[in-house]
Length: 161
Image (cartoon, rainbow, N blue to C red; front, side, top):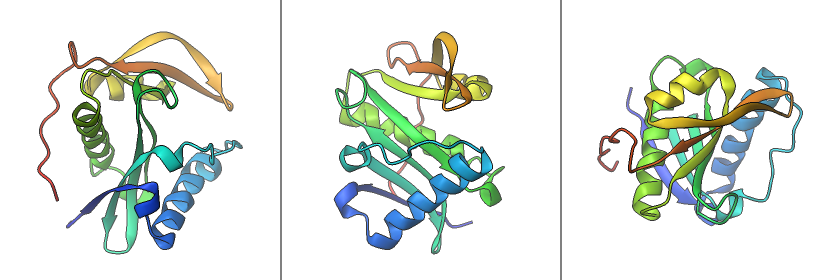
């Protein structure tokens, strides 16, 4: 596969790109996971968006939020891979790129995520540590997890492109 990776601010996303992002998020988070929630939370406008495509098809997405917007620390969120593209390690690549972006953009800031609880081990392998108990968010068990650059595994540098 020849993936195309894109990093863009909200205003840099074209109409079709934004539509593809929102469509993928709804297809997975609302339809597949059967979770009725308000996806449009007014954080996208201040986020940096990371997209992975194969041609015109959006395969994966995540957003990076600066410190002080959602949490005192920086954060990653809306991490999603198209069901048809799963099993290719795109999720890991997305998260690694998000970690690298946040560490370069906001050095010294930890990175927080609200992980679905069943993915605790997955994110632990990427350097995140669980904090506190599991909690219900929109009918799905979650756990807050922190990437502390002082104690987490090294994130491999990903060449641009």
